[in-house]
Image (cartoon, rainbow, N blue to C red):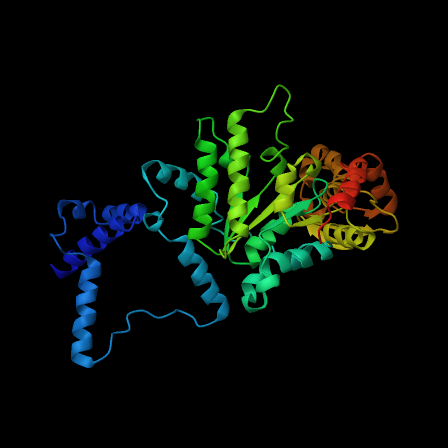
Length: 401
């Protein structure tokens, strides 16, 4: 009887705190037996716990210790704090009402619940960008005592540059290393066809970020949300103007508050951004094409001197001088993949025509040479080299590092 009472109290407590999924799972594990009971008036699990604590204090002159950390290591403790923030029920969110509850649930679906597992050392090159992102996002949380007064943390940072240079990868590193609540927001997250919902979604986004602080709001493809106002052909839609205004107002609110909420934005077309948004993104960092050492490191990573793939050994012998100049990181990965594929193509005919010798473990591949690599580069054009002039001009006008 006591165990049944305890289960009913737990089920009632979960529902009261907004953990509807957990309550449903508990009910299913008891084959629906909990639905046949309800808690008596003026009784709940929290009150029972308070009564026990009072009794324990009267008897032993101290309060009972009910829980302890599973590990005292700093890493586990930070993980515990992050999970505690992510598990905070929306019932405690002060901005919640009938309509806002649905909008908050939509925004909550864009929170990173799992670690992207991208470390700073996993990003090849981009040393200046990594340093500046750490200064803006990581260090203010790690060393808050240093960021006071004139050194108060920045509230917004823009990563801009050609596609495929590592902007989103930097954002994933922030999500991995900072252990903040990470909101991965795109245009589809905050743009609604229903009148008035877009600006409400923006408002709920920032209120949720404060509720689950410290938080990072990552706005990907920012130009699709915050293009220059009044420049659309035929006039800008009223709903779009209201959403942009609300986003600017919310960012103004961040700059005047002590909330640990940071806005990280990425754009491939920074010259299309509204100037008011550029002013609010205090740090603007060009994530450009990789340097020669970075290109060499990338090619060595994707095409090491000796690697094994699908049971076959792949050997490479490359001269890195001037290889892949003007190519982005994603371009180089594509070139390396295509270069490796040129060797594999040479064995397809043999595999198809001699079924009895189709065991790939006995296939010997030749070595990939510099000439092979250059041949692939000649037929794989860079995706953004022609735009670098515009990015450089934008940097000269709006650089803030």
